[in-house]
Image 1 (spheres, rainbow, N blue to C red):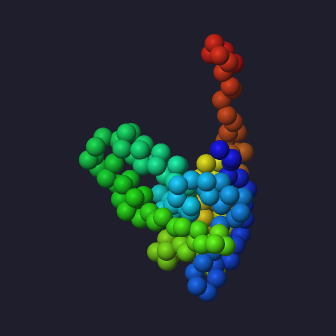
Image 2: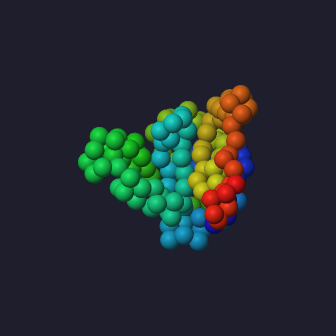
Image 3: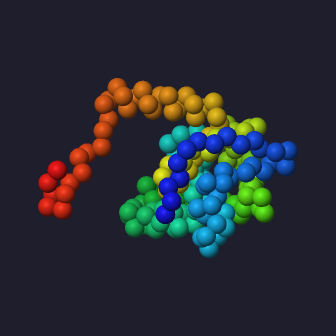
Length: 156
């Protein structure tokens, strides 16, 4: 699968439509559902968005990883599935993000789409800029790095 990377800002029109960036949209047009799934982030004031295959894998993980009917599973099901929406692309590649999600993300006139490899986020541009600078500062302060890649015999 092609990676979702980069940042794009698009305006929300008077009818509430916003164009999903073409590099992102092109990845999802070959799935069974020609659109995106959106739901509120549980970590930040933004919206998470993905294609059908990622959303199916996410829901499977919710089912497989957590004890059935546990409070943790219920909380995540409520946070994600109860608030999720399947948004089909119109012929111009636009979607209408529900007002409740835009309000949760403090998004009004324009939105920033941010790639996260196999899903993307939708932010208020100013909020994302603050988040981006904070994240970079934190990574530098902590000297965050990836672990060394291990070879076939477990050696680095």
